[in-house]
Amino acid sequence: MAVAEMREDETEDTLPDLLRDGLDVVFVGINPSLYSAQRGHYFARPTNRFWRAFSRSKLSGPARRALAVAVLTPAQDRVLLEHGFGFTDLVKRPTARAAEVANEIGAGIDALAAKLERHRPRFACFHGITGYRPVHLCLAADKAAPALGLQPVLIGATRLFVVPNPSGANAHATPAEQTRWYDRLADELAGQNPL
Image (cartoon, rainbow, N blue to C red):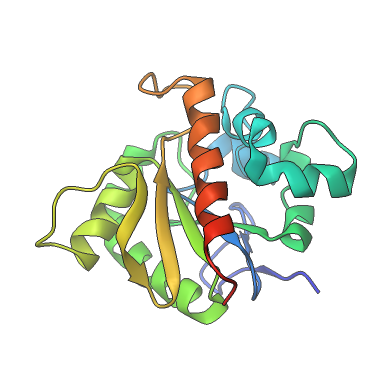
């Protein structure tokens, strides 16, 4: 049975964690946007490229086929738990800009690690180097700077993977490149034996 978790310190004005045991991938954002929190769904802003890129990727193929849809939408974030995908954030407080929670990320890393160690997803997929960098500094301070793709460190048994930030404000990656990164994650997932 799917479980949408909400910690005691979270308010109804944020997005609940969409987590459960046995997930293949948990998508990790920095924090919810005000827009997404108001609508009650992850990546709800129409200019965010997550749903379009994810829907075009082979990573979402089994879920799209099972749901008989060509394109997944924010309204399907909760049902994706039944298809191996979850969602969470480093910081649960919604803001207009992720930079507004920069001082809260340290505590968020500890909370995220606890969630991943509890639920043991196969992969945690971080959206953007900016969001992943503080996690990298905590886990591998003496290693090379983080890059997109599979990371050399784990949180518990969970492998870490970084894709470009799907925000419409991210001019560093095209929608096609975003899709290719989800395809690469699908390849990593296919190459790893289930836990």
